[in-house]
Structures are given as C-alpha cells and as structure tokens.
Image (cartoon, rainbow, N blue to C red; front, side, top):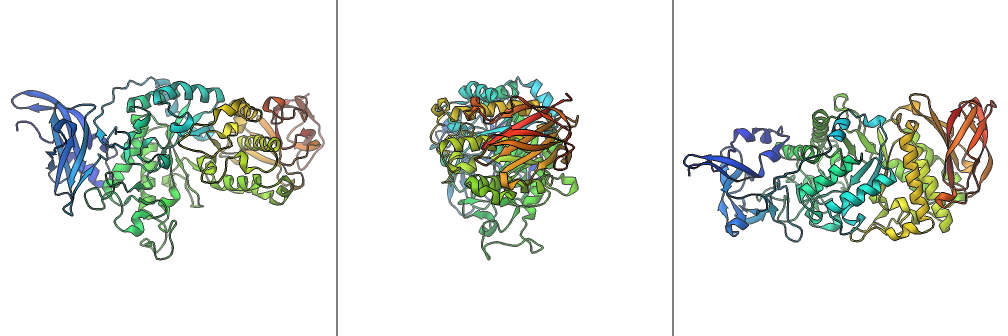
Amino acid sequence: MAHDVAGGLTGWSLEGFHNGGDTECWKRLGAHEVTVFDDERGEISGTRFAVWAPNAREVRLNADFNWWTGDSMHLVPGSGVWAIFVEGVGTGALYKYNILCADGVWREKVDPMAFFAEQAPANSSIVYTSKYLWDDDEWMTRRAGSRPHAEPMSVYELHLGSWRRGKTYLELADELVEYVTWQGYTHVELMPITEHPFEPSWGYQVTNYFAPMSRLGRPDEFRYLVDRLHQAGIGVILDWVPGHFPKDEWALGRFDGTALYEHADPRQGEHRDWGTYIFNYGRSEVKSFLVSNALYWVTEFHIDALRVDAVASMLYLDYSREDGEWVPNIYGGNENLEAIDFLRYVNKHLYERVPGVVMIAEESTSFGGVTKPVHNGGLGFGFKWNMGWMNDSLRYLALEPIHRQYHHHEMTFAMVYAYSENFVLPISHDEVVHGKGSMINKIPQDTWRQFATLRAFYSYMWAFPGKKLIFMGCEFGQRSEFNESASLEWWVTDLWGHHGLQRLFKDLNELYRSHPALWELDSNPAGFRWINADDAGSNCFSWIRADSAGKEVAVVVNFSSEPWTRYRLGLTRPGLWKEILNSDAGIYDGSGSHGNLGQVLADTEGWNGFPASATVVVPPLGAVYFEYVGEE
C-alpha cells in the first residue's frame, strides 16, 4: 500500500499518552477525518481510527462501510495502539472495534474516544467532525478575566432529559435560555450529558466520556445550546464523573480482556454499592484519558465549570467498605494517594490552561484543603459543595416549629467552618430522590406553613455566605420527587403557593445579583457578622452582609409560626434601612400583613453589641432584608 496505513500516527506521537502527560489525547485516539498522501494518487481523504488495546492479540474495525465484516487494524510499533486509515469514510459512519482479547475471546467494543454515539439500545460509535462556529466571544473574553469567588453564582441544576421531557438541544436553546434568564440565575448546572445507555442512572454511569448524549441531538446542537446560554450571560457547569464507570460488556470495562482502565484488584477497582468499576488512577494512560476528557469539555464545548461527582469515593480506599474489603496505601492509611495525585493534576492543569474555568467538588467528608491551591498542599478545587450545611438545614426544617428552639445551633454551626473552604450551598437532585421526598414535603404542618417555611428558608440561603445551587422544580415547590422519565409538573406554577414561590426566586436572584454585599466577600470573614445567632426562643437568626465598599444588608429570618411585631434588631449605624425583601408579601402568596411599610429608622440605642438598633416586624415563618440607605 502506497500510503500510511496508520494515518500519520506514530509511537512518538503517543509517547505523552503513555507517560500521563497527554492532556489532549482525543486528538490522537478515536476517529478523525484526515487527509493522507499517497505516492501514486496524491492526497486522499478518509478517516483514521485508533484505539489503545495493548494486550489484544488482534483488533478489527467493524463498520457499516465494510458490512460489519471487520478490517484488520495495525499495531503502531511500541505503543499498544491499533490504527487504520479508511479512504472515503467521513462523518456519520457507524463503527465498533472487534478485539481478540488476551483470553482468546473476541469482544466487540465501542470507541472510548468516540465523539458521537447511537442512542440506546443501539451503541455504535459514529464518526463526527464538528463544523460549529461559536458566537460567544464576548462571554469567553469576560470569563478569562473573571474572579469567581468575588462574583455572584446562583446555579439552576437540571436534568436536561426531564426538565421538559422530549425537548431537543435546539428546543432547549430557546426554552431553557428564556426561563433561566427570566428567573435570573447566573449559571445552569447540567447533570451528566455524557452518553449513558441506562437513563435511570441520570448520566452518572457513563459509557462514552467524549460524546454528548444523542437522545437530545447531535454534538454541534449541544454546542449551540451552550452558545445560546453564553450569549444570554449564563454560565454552564457540567457534572463530570471520573470516579467510576459501568460494567457494560461493550464499553470500557476489561477493554482488551484485561483491566485496562479499571484497577485489577476488586478491593480497589469495584464499587459494590453501585455495581461499577473504579478507574486505575495510578496508570499513566488513564490519567491522560481523564485529564484530556476534562479539558475536552472545557475547550471543545466551552463549558465554564466542572462539578466533580462523588469525590469522597475517590479520596478514600475504604469508602463504603468493611474491614478486609480494602487495601491500605503504602503508609498504611486509607487515603487513595493515586486518586489524590490525579485530582491535583487535573485541577492544576485546567486552572493553568483555561483562565476563568472553575472546578467544583462534591465532597461529603471533612478532608482538608479541598479548595486550597495545589501549590499550598490542597486538592486545588475552586469550590466545594457544603454538604454539612445542607444536612443540618434539612434536619432543622423537618422539625415542628415548637421543637426548632432545641436545634437552633444546627443552623448556626455552618459559620464555625464557613471560611475553611470556598463553599457552594447545594439543594441538589440528591435531596429530592429515593424516598427522601420533595423539598415541600419535608416540611411539617399545613400547606400555608409549608410554603411560608420554604420561602423563609430560601431567603435565608440566598443571604447566607456561599454560592447558591437549587435543583429544578424546587423553585416552584413541586411535590413529586424527581423522576427522570417525566417532565417537571409545570402546570402547578399557576396555582397558589407554587406561583408565589417561583416569583420569590425571581426576586431573590435579582436582589442577589444587584447587591454585592450578598456575594463579593463570600470567602472573607469581613463580609459577615452575626447580629444575633442565639435567639433560640424566637427561632430567629439575624446577620449583616457587607461588600468591600462598606454597603450593608441586614437579614432577619423567623422559623417560628409566630409574628414578632416589635423585634429589636441591633444595627451597625443609625439612619434609614430600606426593606428590600419580605418573604411574607402578598406577591409571594404570603399574608401581606407583616411588613415594615418599606423601611425602618435605626436610632442610636445600642443593642446586643451594636451601636444602633431598630424595632422591626418579622413575619411568621418569614424573612426580611434591609439595605442601609443613609442618615435621616
């Protein structure tokens, strides 16, 4: 044959992949439309296929263009990678790899680097070359100069397949953008959109790490959705799952008959709870695969942040294991040193490579330094989900109001460790599934009190230090648990209570974004001061938020069923404090009868260690915000 059968791929070009330093391995492996030079015919167009299978005896390319009979692939010398160039093949071709594994058994596998894949139950990989032209230059320029910790972050988490069931990427580019813009969120967070055949896994059991799920459209149509969100000023966070992968026979597991991507020892390589494999983070090629995958979504799809799923399961060798079911590290401890090294590597690389990108950890333990920079000994994440705050808050809300006074500290405890990490306050999909009940159904008593409590709680959350995250449906009080096979119950948004809650979220986001006191110093103790953290008898919490310019917002939240009509509130200075939010207002389906007539006047009477104070009205199961306006 007069042209290069491997389509230009050499052992030299794969050296980085083998030493863990190739952070763009998708450009070398997988299916690529290329042009090669033939001695007799000149330039020839086609597709180069390349797959890592070092222990395979033989690999064949099965495809629709060869009637699935298999073309023999060629081992690139010294690389463990098999490759072939096929003339005349381009975007849309279906293919798989047929591997004669080390154990003598032929197994048909999908391409680990496929950019596009068939919908389940079909699973062929699809040759795909993006033709997308981005139109988000303004957003990308601004992102490169952003300061995420000192900027507002109000995140709407959603499952694209069930937000409005049956909608495509193209339809969502209109409807989702319109809704999120109207509600005022700064970001959306998408539960994993990487290809996954088992829909009830919600995307957390990934079979194609480089392919957006094809149920909703083609990869460039997903790019269009991201582009439209950016043009509307909305950031895009993607859930990323490097902690485990499913055991589907045709996917990554035992890829060439051996444990290639996963750890061979089941005590280190399997999650029994989840029925999945665990990546072998100590293997250089696996590190190249995963760090490349993170960079791929950030660069090729303009994703602004990755929220890394189940980080705790990666950090600990004994995660969800009994004695004797795990292997200690070389020092005899339970930390997974190879996973820790990998997380530091991927975080450091992305932050250095892509200015403005954000890495977020879902990490449920007290592991130290999750959001501390790598050069200071930390894991290098930008933010961490505050699971402690979430658990404490939900326990408190589930109590009858009369009992909350005995658990008052559960709502104040988060401030003890608030500045140990950079936190996101999450009310995520995990809190409204598997029998946990929807948010509104966690709260005791009648419907009026349920809605009032939710309005008070979300007002509390939006004024508390930390970035915000809310799961779809929670913003209008959906009563059903999350169900990936059904749309949200949009029809209830016209009903009393639900409509008012949805309207409150719109106003909370507007207030939040327009008041730097509520976000600029989230990671700085100077941005927060308790007014009264100890008023357990009234079920009241009050504090001051401040920005770097000295502007202040005072917050009072009442989790009792009683209105406090003459509540003495310590304040930083005398003068006019304008009421900018009252969660009991009629527009939110509250009673509308417990307000402050738009403002309060603070006098010079000291109170609770503050030089000024005012008498305010705090509604039952309600919250009020006051903004300092100035002297009389």
